[in-house]
Structures are given as C-alpha cells and as structure tokens.
Image (tube, rainbow over all chains, first blue to last red; front, top):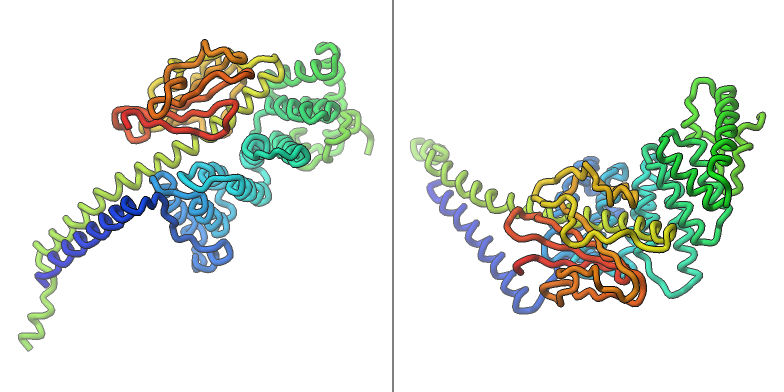
Length: 277
Length: 181
C-alpha cells in the first residue's frame, strides 16, 4: 500500500512525458491540428444513455477549450457542435455560439463550414421558434459570410438571408428598429413594395416610440411621402386594427398578432387588419 | 489470520495526503488551462458576433447616406480597457447610437471595439496598427472604393499585452494579432 503515492506520482510523470512526446512529435512533423472525438449526430442521443442535457453540457465543455486551443479545426468544432444539438436540441445558447465557433477554428474553415453553421442555425430556427437571435444570425451569415460568383446563387442567398431577418424582427424581444435593416435589404433586392409593406406592418405592431419614428422616417423615404401624412394615415389604420382586434380577441393584447395573426407579407395591406371577418 | 488482517489495514494519512497533493497539482495545472481556453473561445465568438452586427450596420448606414459613418480611429475602443472579465457596454457611446448598433449577442463583452472609415483611396484615417505590415500590423491599405475596417481589442488571459482582431470591407476573414508575439 505504501506504493500508492509512488504509483500516483509515476502515473503523473508518465502522462506528462507522453504529453511532451506528442507535443515534440507535432513540432517535428508540423502537425498543427487535432481532431477531438465526437459522436455522430445519430449516435449522440444513444450514447447519452438518456442523460441528454448532461451529455450536451459535457460536449460543450469539450468544445470550448478545443476551440480556444491552438489546434482546432472546423471539422472538429462542427462535429462537436452537431453532436451537442443532436443530444439536446433545446439548448438555446449553443446555436449561435456554435455557428460562430465553427468559422473561427484555426484550420479548415471554408464555404462548407459556413454552410454547416447555417444548417445548424436553421435547425435552431425550427427547434426554438420564439428566439429572434438565431434567425437573425443565420440571416447575417447568408448575407455576409457566404461568397459566390454566381449571381443567381447570390440572389437566392440574399433572399433567404433577408427572409430570415424579417422573420427575426417579428419574434418576441426583437429590436423593432431592425425593421429598417430588413427594408434596406429588400430594397437592395429590388423589392421596393415588399420593403414598404414590411415597414407598415412593423409600424402597426411596435410600441417603441423611438423605433416607430425611425421606421416612419424610413417609410416616408421609401414611399416618397410626407412623414406627417403617413403617420396620420397609419395612426388611423392602427386604431382600426386595434378596434378590430379587441372585438375579435378581447382577452389578448394586440401584440399577440405576431403570434396568431395572419401572415402579412407579401402584399400586406393594413386595411386587411381592420376588415370585418 | 494476523497476515490477512495486516493486508486490510488501508491507507496511511501520509499516503492519502500525497495522493491528494498530486491530484491538487494536476487540477491546479488543468483548471487555468481549461478556463483560459474556454474564455478565449467565448471571446472570439463574441468578436465574430460584434463584427457581423457592425458590418450589417455599416452597410445600412452607407446605403442610407451614401457614406460609411464617421471614422473613430484606433484610440476609440469601447470599452476602453478590456479585461479578462466581461464588462457592460453601457453607457453606449454616441457613435454606436448613431449607427444604431444593437448587438445581437450579449451586452457584456470581453473586448473593446472600434472602426475606421474612409473614401476611395483615402488613407488619412488608417491607423498605425492597421497599416503596419504583418506580423506587427494588419497590412491594410485604403482600397479604390469607400472602405471601413473593424477592430477589436481583447485581453482574454489577463496578462500584459492585448490581442487584436481585424476585418475590413474588402476581406471577410478575421485576422488576429497578439501583442508581443
């Protein structure tokens, strides 16, 4: 039994020597990357033995120092992240972090990595439909990170990115002023009327006074109209909308339109909201 | 019988203390490495998020007004002194409000952020760190179109010297520079 401390010290020394040997070998061979073990997305839920959230936490605890270390690869981070969301699809915090983490690995980041990151975020959009940050981040990645020389592909990605940002700004806690960002993106796609429709819709449902004024200014600019006249027109439309809403849904605040109201764009007309049903 | 009892006597206090000490040494080495690399991973993901938000705002501003927002320069990082602990971005500087930067990530940040902008071919606003050739700088030179670059300054390990992150309007990649390396 007195050999126990000696054995512990010996094991520690052997482990340290092994680490030093691997590091020295990497230095000699120029190996600059390291692939961590990550179960496949299909196997991860099974390997968690029912403890899915714990497995996701452990995989995240592995992914973070791996990304922060000097030898991370896009493939390694992506494999860990895909295993995390396969283990616990409701793990809200990991979607955005993982999408960025994949593209920040030290090696192997290319267009495929961005597409995998977007696929992860698109899954997050489906799993967590009330989260505005996931579609917003996905939209930004479509618009900014994906690169192509093919105009048709570029337009398709811009369209998808814009659609995701438009979806994001209609979710709870999303900044209403981001509506102007969506309008700018729609204008850039040549869809002037859709930009105007989106702004009119946001004006009716946002209660943030400063954001409303900015949206109104942007709407006036796009419509080539006077901001005061527009404000009066929309105030009247909002009053009719709220009356109709209160009549049809007396127990629900008007903001619930976002969740249960009709899909407005494209072709949104504020008058539709006040029409008798 | 006495030999059998002799084998069952268990560990001595010294043996336990040595084993605990060895485990303590291993843990003391592992925990700082783990927290350091974890903090770096979180910090870099934050930089990516902020750069994306800033890009979106820069382009929106440019589309609305025809020019990128006024240059802040390399002395205008916010928060000014990044630390190994997160800091709040509030109060937000007027320049951030002007471009309506609404971070999609956390409002507690590891890094400070700034930007520089300029017209086509105009290098007047290009800072020293941006213009210096690698490895001491990012080698940025004003392109033949209106431009901006974004810079983050972080101190993720708490040691002297900053890490800088850089991206610009013509190159989406994020480049890194560790001071002193």
